[in-house]
Length: 398
Image (cartoon, rainbow, N blue to C red; front, side, top):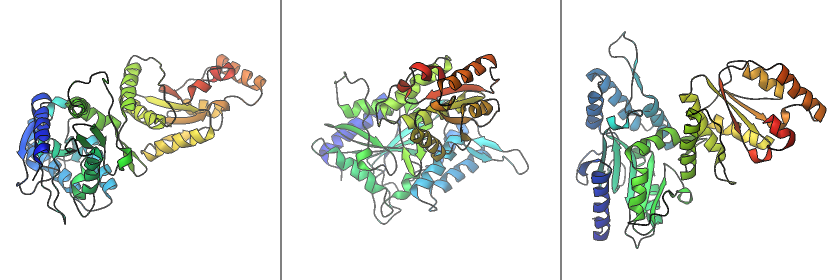
């Protein structure tokens, strides 16, 4: 039985989702049987509404449901596979012998074509122990978010710990194969967010419009993060699977990404300022992936000023599945890479442009100026630690 004080908060949050954010209210599912992370009827209904045939809709629903409920692999592996399926679509033939078509369980490009809904007190009874998440956020019947609420006198850490324990195999690990966002909140401390297997100390706080202190911070940040368009945008463009750890963007990373996208579209350069430990490598991954997906014939050159940074950035891109990447041994080798169509990602050190002597460097720059290379593709240059490379010869190199 939910605490009466928590019930008041939960009623308010349900009203926020339905009346302000436009989510459909599916009801209280405490006594409903067979609650799932993929509600098949809801998913099929949306696919048919978006014009897919009955045959393709049935095949897509089956593939999503089967993957969501497999026991093979770790939760991380299953969640990563599900993310790929949702993001890139299900490949299926309408009939035997016909060409494959791609069915997207979620319409990422037209967010208004999806059905956003919530259910509360969602009883999960498939494992040894029954648990009941307070509110589950569904998109086309697929559980993408889970919100745990506590009364204002109970520390928000209790909500976080509840989310973490729910993911254990003895409880309801199976349910989280589709989940992208985990929210924890109360009336006094506001909202924290993470994703599957996020340790408690790494749950994040959203920061936006900090001068606005009207109302509950819990409500304020749910409005920010669960706005339909932004909710899908963060999942589509901000999720990173990094060598066994799933990550969501911090606020500054997401806003930096959105601002940079505008600069790219206008074909302008810019600077994103980061402090130490603020996640600039992941920022480059998010922006780099977006550019490669959205700019035709795009390629990326990443310049750093230290070997360990060069190795780290290459490693981060490899960890997120970007295999078409190379490191250069000299400025001339970089030029050779750029005159070919591949690789699409190139890492280099700024001081590899020319040898140690100033004479050699000057002759290298003069040679480039007199014989400019014919590069392939539209090239974007990321310069890490750029404040160190804007003086004297390094400025010319960069």
